[in-house]
Length: 296
Image (tube, rainbow, N blue to C red; front, side):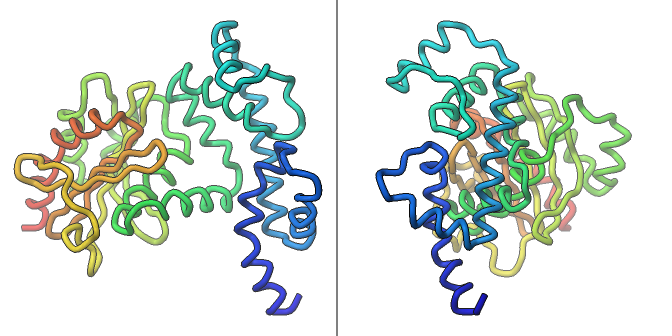
């Protein structure tokens, strides 16, 4: 394929990817799918994406079939979709995704995050992260990306890690942060993971905690030149004992963040707004003081 042909195909990929759900839902109007199928026949990356979505549907259907649904829930889902529930076909229609989403909400956060594990290819995961990251400011993408990559896509432990594992993973310099987080999060939350990790060649201190329904992360990264919330397009959304805190939201993710002289600090979660605000208000000052001690 020539350079000109390759460039043209890449430019056409965006509209084709947007139409994939319609294709799987058999929702093309007469003749509208010809351009789509022609592109799929020529574009290797879009064929991989389509195959990944079909495989995702198959795996998600298998997971959903193993869950018993009450007649009342089934009726409510059917009414919300304004059509009866049908047997699941090979394709992945929107009503099936609605059923899966309702099941995840009914059963709790653990199931919804297991569904996150079904994004089965690295390209699909990166594509999803690119889409949601484009909806928040650049400085907010730092914490969002690590939380989704490390805590959502990777299966977090179902039980808290032993203290000796946490101590080894955190190292003596940052180990004190674990106690700070433990002391200032709600009593029903438990820390399940605390370690150093990396994403896109950037290193993080990452502490995750859950309550059975929600997953949250404290993500800390060294600031790079030019990274400053005060010079971004964001304005402080709240003050934690005089410390300005900045906020963003994309899909189910709430992001609260602040900075010190050397660090960017994020709380990323699927908490309701009010709970994310409450947790960051409790965490911000003790974490700031800990990090300022490291900076001195």
